[in-house]
Length: 372
Image (cartoon, rainbow, N blue to C red; front, side, top):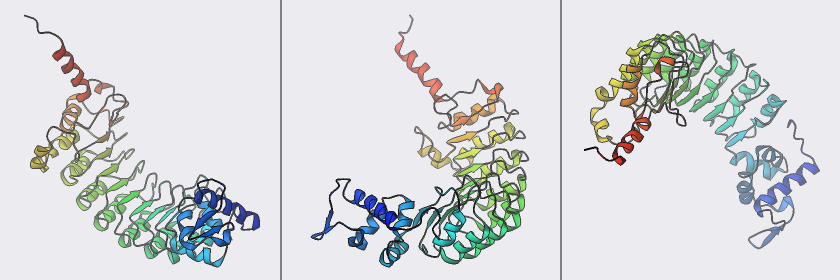
């Protein structure tokens, strides 16, 4: 069953018109290939079909796969990316129908505005889509632990997984997933309040050593034990969002500063236990961890150090500590228009400035004549 897109003669004609508009550059003329003029959808050679399908929307691709057996086989074997977020209802049935056909998928986007997906759809993906590398299941409120167990068994090559807003997953199921999906580089757990616990983060630290980006926004069960396990187990971590993780303290940030030498983006919004000690540890890590590299990069923006930091509502911080961090990492800008250093709600940090504020002053001094 193809939800919202039943294949009939009108659908095929519309599909053909779309395909021909793309192939002919919307000239309205027939497409000529190897001396043969293509005027009907049955005339399109397979190699041209795959080229055209790569340019049209996913809904048209699905309809095209139902034209005939040749088209179905060509599209099913050649299609590696698919987004079904346009499907407002019956997405679950659509996945059940398409997953057995599109077995070569590497990227599958199933983001939803209204929860539709159920565990049986993910189990179908488990059975047929073993090459999957990038999967977006965000806002899938109906999914339970069965889905994570299914992904663990059927999709071990996942490098990017977005399960943000999936509030029913447990930390036990997430821990199980990490035992099999060890190639994960990007993981979004924002709002997964039951799954993102210290137990789960310890498992991620043990098993997902290639992890580069992790979103733990508003996971209020995350504490220092979990973040420190991440720091020690995922040394290539570059982006970490801890916004709303109210239990963490300076110990988490110190571990990240010492162990994650490639950290570029850190979100600490509303982490009110963070003090100057954490800021100084980040600043000192630059010299302590990589003195030779920092020296070689002197005079240009920091490519390896912090480029984005959110300390909004971290009201325990003082200007001197944040200024030291800002001076250490010139890519951090609290100034309007750049905002790579976000300090909303920290009224005591208004004096913190970056190179943008210093440079105009220096330029003005160089223009004005020296008084004698």
